[in-house]
Length: 184
Image (cartoon, rainbow, N blue to C red; front, side, top):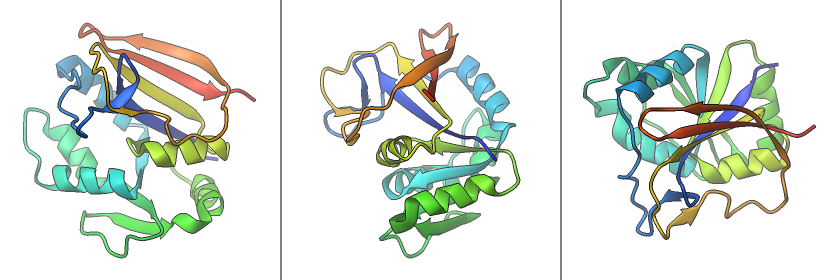
């Protein structure tokens, strides 16, 4: 069965967005992009909730910059949007799956052959999949900034989820990647 991991970026005080929905604070540099490229080599499917998909689809199709390999990866990899309301998508290589059958849909995707599946952002979907026991790893990139207010990473979580710290990765920028696995 394929591994599904969720990858989220947060501030030191646990927010994934600032108080006005801003996401202009992540501390991303060339060391981070090198790490991301190494990670991307193991991924063949990106999973998004509707909101996360809409943010990504608004940025990546026309993105340019100093890291074209990341742009190429984001635009070429298979993308799956879990939604009960979205009816059509325009971002290349994207399909919509029924959000009303979340457990069955994700279990079937994990059973398909392939590399790892990554859930980028999409914190509500991450919380739902953690509660269903479908996330194999939770990767949280903690940025060295305190926002003071914003949207908490797990504000939609309804049940406790026990985790074991599996790995930490530190970056020269001050970022720390915490990799957790759900406790069995």
